[in-house]
Length: 217
Image 1 (cartoon, rainbow, N blue to C red):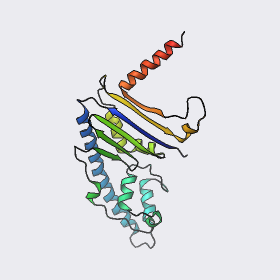
Image 2 (image 1 turned 30 degrees about the vertical axis):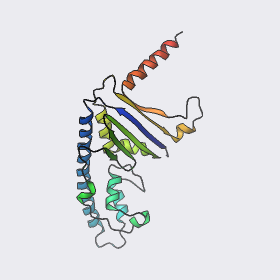
Image 3 (image 1 turned 90 degrees about the vertical axis):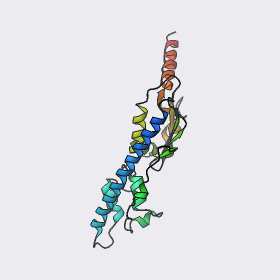
Image 4 (image 1 turned 90 degrees about the horizontal axis):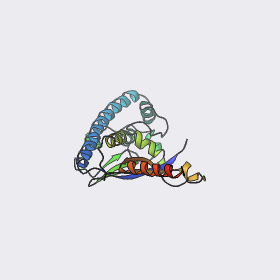
């Protein structure tokens, strides 16, 4: 089922954790890059062997089967990176008729510890600005789901869950989707919070408690 949506937010990290947070995510990204390169080499070898001596063999279809998806379902972990390296052709129709390209290590470059940002597939990314980290997912069909399911997306939210928040740190991630925008009920249609961290959680609980107290009168 279609679900076009987007997500973005700015989260202020405690100054004592900001550098370690970025370093941990860079290390996670580099580990993912290494794993993807090894997987790309393995898949390329498998595809070449499968199509050897077979006329009009559909390598891209075979790739889809290896990834466990069909059509242009990009839900499989590493789909964006692997398909772009193994089948780097602009026209989709040409992918069905071309042999896969041999992956190179430079196709999966590691990031530096001083990186200003890290991609999360092709539709999302993490950006570092001082002690603030930004999460952004482009609007597309199921782009939010893909970003959260991506190995880098999982690493991002896992690391956020480990932060020791202070009174002046935290923030919210907001988003929207086509179903919410079309909902004509009272209070619907606008952007909504998908995640809260640190002081934002505290403020939300306080405001919720205040409303609950007011309703008793």
